[in-house]
Amino acid sequence: MGKDSQNSQVTVIANLKGGSGKSTVAFNLGLWLQMKGQPVVAYDLDPQCTLGDVAEVRREEGYAPPLVVYQNTEKLKDILRMHPGQVLVDVGAANMEAMKQAIVNADRVLIPVPPSQPDVWATQRFIEIVKEAVNNGDGPDLYAFVNRADTHRAVRESDETEEVLAQLPGINLIPHRLCQRTIYRRSLSEGLGIFELSKRSKAVEEFSIFADSLFPNIKARKKLNS
Ligand SMILES: Nc1ncnc2c1ncn2[C@@H]1O[C@H](COP(=O)(O)OP(=O)(O)O)[C@@H](O)[C@H]1O
Ligand SMILES: [Mg+2]
Image 1 (spheres, rainbow, N blue to C red):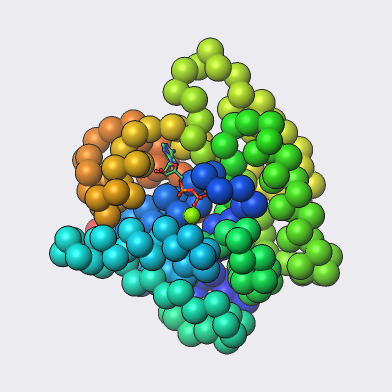
Image 2: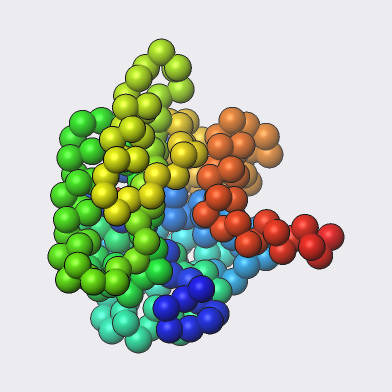
């Protein structure tokens, strides 16, 4: 699966704008993977350090298992693939150099996009930056999805945002949006995954479908063993 190693898959979670949900998604994906028995480490390369902070809250509260979050920004080419299993990398525009290095060395980039025109514009810019970083060569696969979607069906922004994302060249649309739900805020403040906060809720249902689509092999393997 990995570019250089059979054993690691590097997923960068990125976008130019803050508040799109990068750290929220990275944290919950990390815990979800651990719940599925997958080895996972995370890197927080954003100077805001949200992912590092929330992992620290989780550790202080004694919730198990902890999520291991590294914050090295140097020599990413060498270190990202040292870890067998899943490697999640949270990056922000405040450190563009680290963002580009992570992207160049990733298998795929996951791009959360809130349903708004400025966020769509920022995503288009971001794709340009990715293309530049990989020199228009063999870059990572790019996956965009709508995060913070409105829960009211009458509101059309999320549909429209998905339509635009689906048409962007080089982008794969993940057709499983995550809605704006308060449980994500609790997740970050308490250091727990949303599925640890609630066994059954719309948020958990949505997230499970989303995560299953990102890691289809994990689901299949579980079935085989059971
Ligand atoms: N789907 C969502 N529903 C509700 N709140 C969300 C959602 N995704 C993110 N948030 C909230 O938005 C804020 C910014 O999210 P964060 O993950 O820190 O964004 P980023 O890392 O892209 O800057 C946080 O308070 C987070 O809890
Ligand atoms: Mg963040």
